[in-house]
Length: 268
Ligand SMILES: [Mn+2]
Image (cartoon, rainbow, N blue to C red):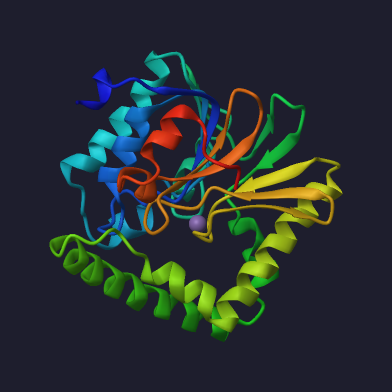
């Protein structure tokens, strides 16, 4: 069935980040499937949607990347309010913060209130890099390794797909199994939670580190919507105000699709 003719799950809000359109790593197939399956009152783009850095190095823009932008803009025609919070890879758009284009608006950061009255600060998260990456050498080493891991991941998954196995992320495996990467993640989460706490809010929603999460940290909620390179995840607020992480690679591989459609999946 084409996405436009499929019944959609209706949710209150969808947060997605780190799509990285303009790179080869972006999983547009899964993202288009997700966007076609979900109707949200609000769609909040939490940065690194278009990767201007990568586009500046080399122009890579297949048809499917235009289709993603069209699907997002198409949401506004279905009455979805779209809020675009640019990240560091789509930094040029930060000049447009405060602009409105019909139901699409660009914001430097955004305050989202859930149906249960939780007030969440939404920002991409590169704001915390200065705090977290005090060791510049480690940061440089880390991003170099990350590129190698992504390339390996791509090759491995091509092979796995050909052999009929389901998508598996080497990058996220490495990130949870390397001590320094975990230290970075921990530092990032603490910095984000601290910011929400200091502003007297109930929580924070970010992207940037490509690591989906919902966790309570020192009295505030830390949420990360993940990415569409590895984890292919979205943070979703259901109509009853419950926040969940939806992992779309698992959902389409067959073992979670029905549960997602019925809204029966457990909270993350
Ligand atoms: Mn980023």
